[in-house]
View 1 (cartoon, helix red, strand yellow):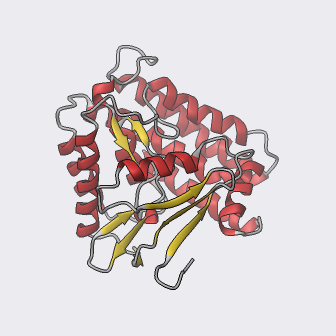
View 2 (cartoon, one colour):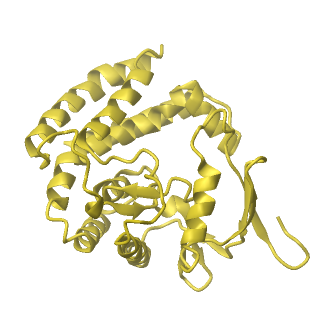
Length: 290
């Protein structure tokens, strides 16, 4: 929206009857909390009843190609969040779908699988039974042998948790005219395991990362959280599971709830082509796991 003097960005959030997460409240709270950082947009105003918020207009462009400058700025942002995380009294909730224990990660995958399994679609059914399930069983075995915690219910200690954007990458970034990156869409922000933040960045389907980019990112995050002596072990153990989790997230359009959210965001109609495209993306992820 544009006034005579300034431009603003209006954000409409999903109906709370459909998505129970307080996305507007969380994003507004997060942006105010991070107000001193040029990396995030300023909140101008908001209305929780109408479920809309008004943000400053970011003069810049969407990021098409990932380069070293973007990765360095992304790592710089994560390092600032890690430094803020030293204050454990900060009144910020857990990130959306945080994974603070082994069982939470396993449970999220199982829940998504059980939602998709009864859907009557031959292509989807074949993928789940013949492709996903064998890898899922192998990934659990791999995970069981490597997870460092004494038991799967044990939550990650607060001192090892970090404040995380949760949904983080070029898809939620804008490059300002001076080259600085602004990270937007922070409605899922909160406390989480830095391993999940690291893995999600690498697995997210919007992130077209070359091998050198992946190494640079992993080395950078590992260095930021170097005082967490089990970071690398947790990452290795859960890497296949986070890939499987993303394969199922991509298939969310097969569900009515998932399609409603997609339609709310981009106003598209469900079609076989779109579903087939999502299925191919999930297949690609599964091929990269082992």
